[in-house]
Image 1: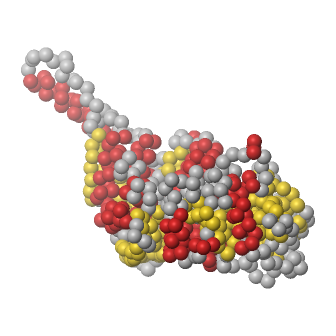
Image 2 (image 1 turned 45 degrees about the horizontal axis):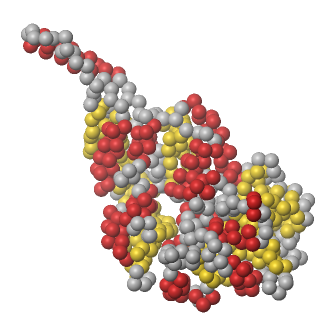
Length: 597
């Protein structure tokens, strides 16, 4: 049986999952009564948000126009920039890619970057124009963009409507005729790429592989080359929505193996699987460790739930190998975990999964990036937690991570977006008019500036039409200070932030104002202060609840009233000395909100 391995790549919301649904229906993998939208999106969050978080594979049977039977291995990929590494591994498991372009939106930032990933792997790219049934569809304009922006031949572009199932048969024919059959020699030693994995509570880790050379079968001893661990294969099979067992996986096929692996962290996406007795000469290229770029601390709302939170995070890590966490403690919030994430979307997904799947009520501290400090003694330290700040007196210089941001926007919104990028300390390095209506802007900007409200404000400024993609380019010198928030004269370590010096005042004012609105009033005044070292740079006050001690004095001498007021003042002063201010959970959430909320 002939095999074709292909993936679907596109920008967010260009219709990847909908097109995958139509291909699955045409291949009769699921009965119409059992069908539901987003068949390959298995998580509730993916369905609700309409995004793909985990790449999924499925084998679709198809009979060509000439009567040849084919097995089409489809890998559906995420579109969001946070999961680019997962996309790159999925691409390297294929010989061809369907590059999906929305007929109403045109070529966007992630379309370009995903196409370059596919070109690096020498994939056969078939441009597909989707959503042709929409009233706003501009097929000639989209073809012109494919020619000009992507450098592909728009003559070979297929026009489809994934929603209406228009042009799907022609797409199947293009897949079997234009995408080359996989090359591979079953006689050579086993050489297979791990492009994904998932955890099954009964079977352990199910490893998704693409076999390039050799054959993998039950009972065979295999080795993971990056971790140097060895296992015995219990089951092999292919993906037919459910797992379908097979006797073996020969060269060129995509499928799964179960080998008694207990934790997802034992399996590295991008690693090479080979035979333990007869290994291949060298691992497949492209493997790299996934490095988190955004850091935040997670604390349980009730400190008694610490052990439950620990268990929940360990279970979540079984399904998400890119989640990194270690123990952390805060004077304000008790024991918790310092966690690393691939980006802000990854952070949001982890937060939602903890709350939904594990029933955890959690507090996330303000997200931070990893800063580099050079100390006066010649030492170099990396800091992602404000509590580990070395102190202004011992720091020689500081550096922060920078990104190269590519923004594609309609020209009408150019002014607002340029203002936003400048406000976020961006430096424009390039501006290209892609056509009369669209502009590509390239900015160098600090990663920390993107963390808070950049993406939300970009979408609101451009009415949702601008697309954003970024690559981390390295570290650059910066003026960094530690901003402490003091409540009643005491620093709250969970609210501390490392900020750019020129932004410290506005950040401190914003935090103090939000806390003033969230902290309940006490019997005494509560000062909320923002401080850099010993210098107070912002202050707000929560006024005291006041008992009317003069209510019983009607008429009488003024000295009597003064005596009562002085007595009250002394009592408030004494109360302030011993009084503790409890921060509600809403106060931590308010600090993280964007300006417009």
